[in-house]
Every structure is written in C-alpha cells, then in structure tokens.
Amino acid sequence: MHFMGVNLWAVLASAVATMVAGFLWYSPALFAKPWTILMGYDPNDKAKMAEMQKGAGPSYGMSFVASILAAFVLGKILQVSGVNSVAYGMEIALAVWLGIVTTVQFTNALFSKQPFRLYLINTGYQAVCYLAMGAILGGWR
Image 1 (cartoon, rainbow, N blue to C red):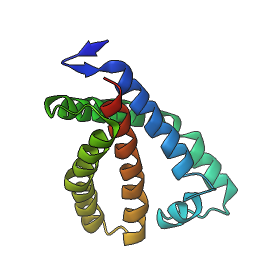
Image 2 (cartoon, one colour):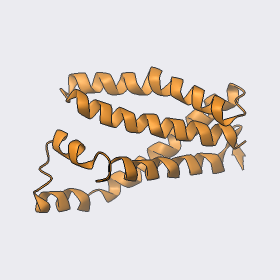
Image 3 (cartoon, rainbow, N blue to C red):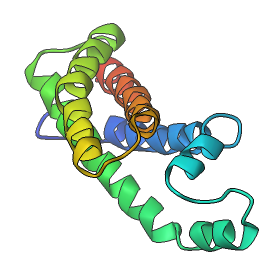
Image 4 (cartoon, one colour):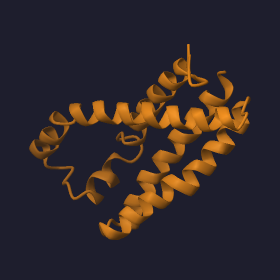
C-alpha cells in the first residue's frame, strides 16, 4: 500500500522500530539512569519515578505519531532520491539525522542549557532511529 510513492507498511514498521529502539535505549540496560539524573529526576525517589511513568502514556502516543510523520517524510525523501537498498537508505537517513536532527537538537540543548551528555544520549537515540528507518524504508519498496 503506497501513498505519494511511499510504502505505508514500511512507514508503520519504521515507527514501530523507533518505539522499540526507545524502549531499549532508555531502559535500565542502557541509558535510563544517566538520562533520568540529567533530566533532574532522582532515580531513587520511587514515588516520583512512578508518577513520571504513570503519566507517560499520552507522550508515548504522540511520540508514535511523530515517528510516523518522520518515517513518512524520510520515505518521501528516499523515494524522490531513487533509493532502492538498505545501505543507501541508511546513508540518506544518516545525512538527514546529521544535517537536520542533530542541529535542531543541539540548538535546543544550547538555549535550554541542557548538559552536553543529555544531548548526546538523546541525539544518539535519534541516530539509531533514523538508521533503522532508513534501512526499513530503503529496503522495503
């Protein structure tokens, strides 16, 4: 199923992949603790952490919608670029991440006075997402 030349199943799979990547990236196995601390939360305050997790549902939903939109736009960029392989899809996705995502996040980090390490954690997650989306969208025509 295609819309404007973009495979909508690949878009959906890409959005799901970003959610899976996020659950792993921000899990205790990877960056949950440093991210939590850098965001100003005390990981030992169980009540505060439970409150934060309890209200996360709507944010996950909106994040999924944003992932669908990002995947669709990346899919359109790949389609007009004539991308037809996983490797080329990842190459273009990396360029989009480097030229657009990192610069926007960096500017935000500067003006919101975020610690540089928090910027690295968040933009690293986006790199993983864009590479996954590029692979899926580039290989699934």
